[in-house]
Amino acid sequence: MNLELVSAPSGETYHIWQRLISGAGLSCDESTEVTALVWDGEELVAAGSRDGAVLKLIAVREDRQGEDLSATVVTALRQNATEAGYTHLFLYTKPTHEETFRGLFFKTVAKTDSVLLMESRAEIDSFIARISQGEPRGESGAIVMNANPFTRGHRYLVEQARALCERLYVFVLSEDRSEFSCADRLEMVKRGVADLGGVAVKPTGPYLVSAATFPTYFLKDRDRAPVAQCEIDIEIFATYYKEAFGITKRFVGSEPLSPLTARYNEALASGLAKRGIECIVLERLEHDGEPISASRVRKLLSEGDVAGASLLLPPSTLAYLTERGMIKNKKTEDDHA
Image 1 (cartoon, rainbow, N blue to C red):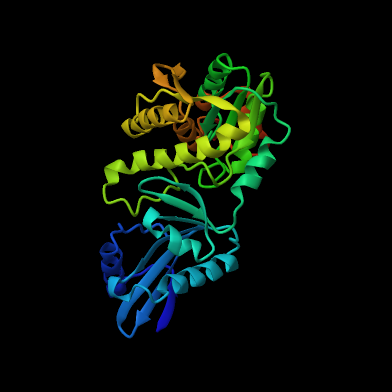
Image 2: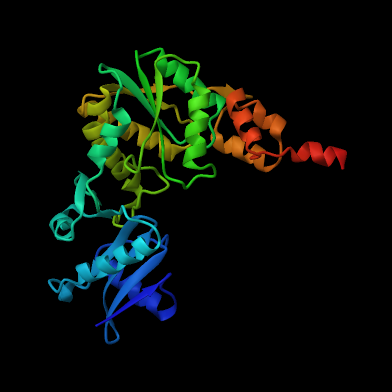
């Protein structure tokens, strides 16, 4: 038996790996940093991949089940992750594999009919206890946002939501896969709502799933991916965040531009209602007939149109980006060239 670690399968190895993955009922996801391949001679009998702190695409050939090959793969990926600086790992798999990975010391975070999320250390309870410490008890509302960056549209949603509840929590996605870092986005939101009473800003930690990181590689029906993502989001939100913060309402912005997000919001509303949380859709703030979006702001900033972007940003965000040298007015420079 030979174990090989590669950055990505290529050439004939890629086709062999692809057949193994497909045979396990998985869909190939090439967003990986490293892949572990277990060979028996020229036969590929097991494989698994790592993308950041997430282990995925773990497959064992059907006729080699029961040989602890999953353990071989996971052990190799764990060691590789540790060397890369990741000590808290996550694993997305099918619910039928729960006992297998429990035996490899993974703890269940959330489970639905089609998706199982596990972590290598049982940390979610302590994380929630930490971010909710000292918060007042009672009914509250919540918004989950990426804020990449925090715009006038985000500020408007916060204002509208705050008017509908006594206490509002704004949870900012924590993964660093956006143009602006988690720390920057969190600080922009805090500054952007500092003058509003009854509003608290919190990180989501690694637990509230985002479209950027949610792996759909084990879903044969890719059209169902937004619903599956939503189901995990609801399970985690209702089980942990709702109880800790007393959340009875969750607010989302209307989505006239993205059918995918609109479908997600519909599934979110239906699922949250079953868990005793009202999902309220708020109309988004518009500028020049278009909803204000962070992507629109990023485009303007990339073009150096600070004047255009400033129309869509609250003064707090503009000041923050300027202070840190994150924006540069190319148009002004070009005019003086």
